[in-house]
Image (cartoon, rainbow, N blue to C red; front, side, top):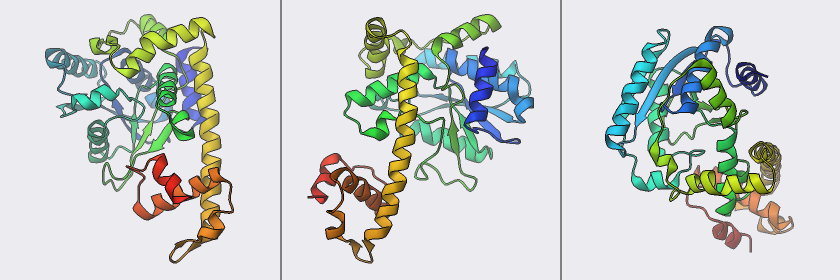
Length: 304
């Protein structure tokens, strides 16, 4: 199956776009984002999309970042139907870069694309995360001791946290390439004779994600299965579906035991320990509006 058809089927399966959607394509200039832009441009009439381009200059790679911005600007000119949201220098700190958590993104990066999408009345932001990125994300969260939500990796689409931006139209991140591997993208670029930029910092194994990509995953693929990224991506999808079911179940149970003063503690303690934690997290999120700063120890202390 060629990449165009595979991406089209993935977009349709997860209903990532609707006819008439405006899509802000996040383009770094790297191979994945160049392929994403080319594919969406190729599909724009078939899917009835209005496309615009956004490029964020993080301000931590000096002249190389400036060359990336110029490359994206020139790339955009090649497709006249695509207008440019522009290049912008952002205060993304080295600490944020060190996290290398592309599945989540730093708040500055997310805010930039949120604002761009909202200002241009574009309801969707397309990023170029692929199947290999998904595998790296799952392994990264596993090593960090994440719960099921983290092991579910990145979803094909998700509504952005309202704390990032106030938008009357709402902004949704979509990942059209999440069902294809990096090798397929590279083959597509070669076939279409598409040029791209390479971020040399991606070769620095001192960053956790880079170490997983450059060191850990190759060894796991050699030892276990060369198709391991696809297997991890499939496992993540199963976990996301089960996590969604359990979250909905916990919300329903919370409704049964919630009182005007909070939660009926006696009723809560009758549940299995795992369900107690879930109910408490749902209750705290509903009360505070978010779960930031909440650790396992906090929830555990409440359920004792």
